[in-house]
Length: 190
Image (cartoon, rainbow, N blue to C red):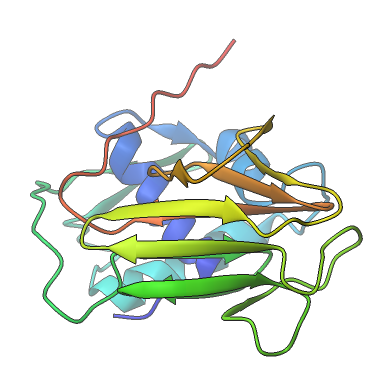
């Protein structure tokens, strides 16, 4: 099932936070950091997500609403392996999603790259991701500004993990591992 990146991020965050109620303010900051959006934007996104997953706001089985406060994921969750032929990893940048299946995938400004990132400081062919089964490695292609994983410059082929952040130039791409072995990231809140 296809979900827009923001709806996918919302679903993933609610599932990871379950059964905790997630406040509207927390979700606004997650989905639209340091931006002003209409108060109704989150409600529209939740309605879009509910429609995609077949949940009903009047009799919710997956996403519970605490009116005026926030939302909570209330369904049972089980993980399943990714069927053969589907992408084991997904990269997201801005509102673009790039599924990565078996093999090599170039990241850069060049239109021939699998992941096209037109941002300041990104080389034509900046980095290469190689996916093999449930594993992925990223390597810099002698780019002028380097490749970073979670804000640390890489010196050679480096394994990618679920929710790693790839920094190239001024762009930051998020890695999602679409397998049952992906670890849940611990979120620390003040």
